[in-house]
Image (tube, rainbow, N blue to C red; front, side, top):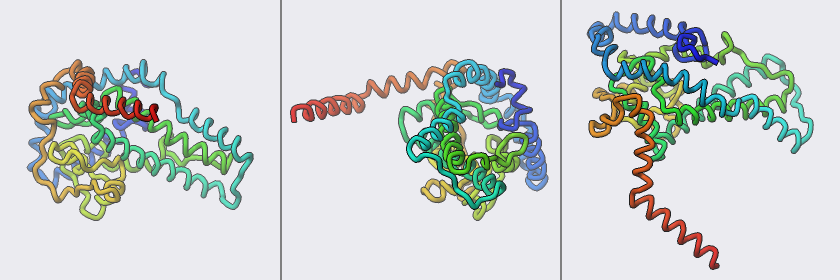
Length: 320
């Protein structure tokens, strides 16, 4: 477990793995050669020394330690979920094996299934974080960044980190348990340096530019299938915040009506509304204000009315 923030640079499972940073740097260099006007923004001290960026740097260090000390110890691992799924299937259906597939075929199908289901569940959890009011209170922490840099990726409230950890364990464990049940020892993953082949390859395609000011789009056709850096930057724009929820793939946004193509947006403004931004200017604010916001929601007439109506419904149900 990485308790040293610098170890994130040598872990291919992490967004800021050195090779992913290098590939993003190369892509940015090529992009800026053709768009020289953006150089003054990217190289500006106002960007890298902005109060929002400085908060990102400090919050990243905090999140590394907090994740190792608090979140990981209470999370069920993907292996535990896979074991539970496999045992449950064995109890229900006994010993089952599907024949006719080679080791290579099973590996390809398994690796692709892991990637697709993980990305699909990431899309839906991300979407819920925007449309469920108490979840949005936590997710606002991420959207409170006024400027973007690669470490903005880690500006995530611990509650959200816990939810995404559960999502990962459940989705990966579920697929693994089913495949082990059906294919046994044939199950294996195509990986690069221990990371899923597809996740690794897509991370090389400028993943760290999503949280940047490099306005790199992929064009209308590709952006219906893959999220471009500019599409994710559009997602961070307060006027387009409920679009482009995809992780690596934008096909989910395309299928479920939340896609915004980069060519359709010209005015991007990062951060929350001005009245809300004052609550997210410090480490203390990022961690505590979501709970304050939820408490205010619970105290509101809407929640009280809902609670009273629910109690009345339960009472009538008992009387019947």
